Length: 62
Image (cartoon, rainbow, N blue to C red; front, side, top):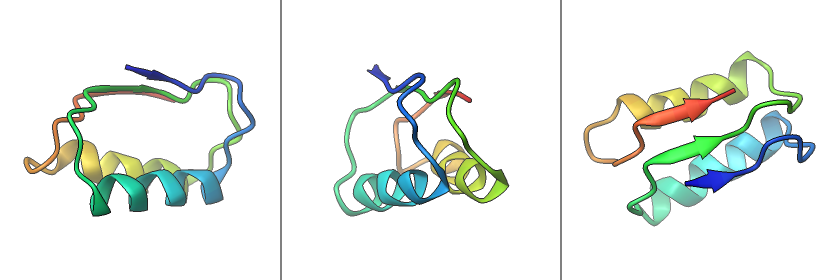
């Protein structure tokens, strides 16, 4: 689990996280991004990874 709760992550940060996870698939199963300033675009980028069977990400907290 990666805990990034209340870390000031924005949509730009979500884009960077999604890009990093796409370019280097990991065994990350849980990602907590609660209490950040996420918009729909950031949420959608990471939700797409959760829905893709090539990635192990199963739990996303926003």
